[in-house]
Length: 117
Image (tube, rainbow, N blue to C red; front, top):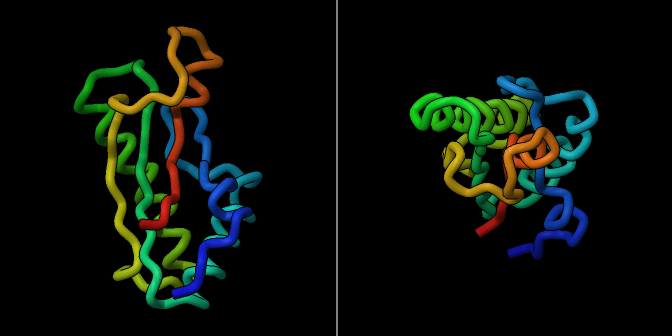
C-alpha cells in the first residue's frame, strides 16, 4: 500500500466560514490533491471528520459538522474517488483544536479533517 505523501498528511484541513458547509475556492486544490492520491491508490481509505465551533446547539453543530464532511466527500467522489474509499463523520463541537470564545478560535474549529487510517 502506498505511503501517504507528507504534503497530504500536513495539508489535510479544510476550513469553513461561519454557518457554512461550502468549500471555499482556496481549499479546492487541497481536496483535489487528496482525490488524485486516492484515485491512484484504490486500496487506501480516508476519513473526513467534520467539526464546528461552539456557537449553536449540540445537535445543530453535529449536523453542520456532518454537512462539512459530506461536502468534502462529495467533492472527492465528483473527482472520481469511489464512495467506498471515503467515510464521512461528524464530531460537531466536541473536538476543538483551539480553545477560547473569540472569532480566532471559532475560525480554527470550523473545519473538516482528512485522515488516512
